[in-house]
Length: 194
Image 1 (cartoon, rainbow, N blue to C red):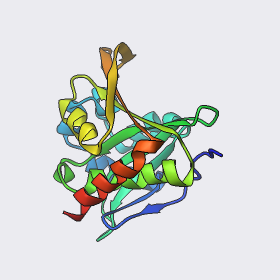
Image 2: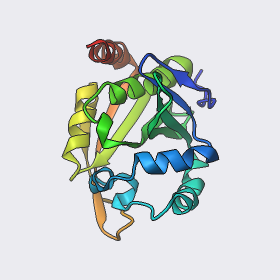
Image 3: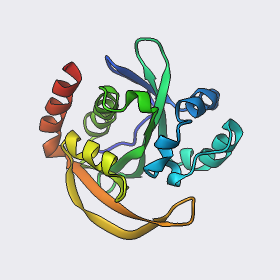
Image 4: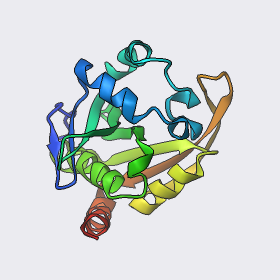
């Protein structure tokens, strides 16, 4: 039986994922303040103007998904956010996305550790059969990171969504299926242990 994520905290050796709280926005805004974060299309390619603007812009969308604050286990520093959403229990599918990190953790164990916790929750705790990850066609850095996770590139949805700046995004769709999860999990654990 497939069940929805329950909003529990997910804790690993590198990161801790806690449900996004109103009190997290100030530190999250500071963590994501670099223009580099938005250049790849995160948040529609437009940085919120302030903590209050971030809270106001994000609150309606965050209410529709399981949004997490990503913290370093070592010291509790907030380094980003990621979410599980588009839950379809009947068809056993879920979307892992809405991920943004401070540039100082790019290329480190943070992303594989975050994805390991979210995928483990989706596949093992909740019983999903398919997990989708997507990014903009122009965001080659994210495409490479998703492929490195072990996800299969399925194709491109052309003129898929309007960005915050008014332009249209072509979206690259990847997926991981439940029967692929054990090998993906093994690869992620090996990457984190390095």
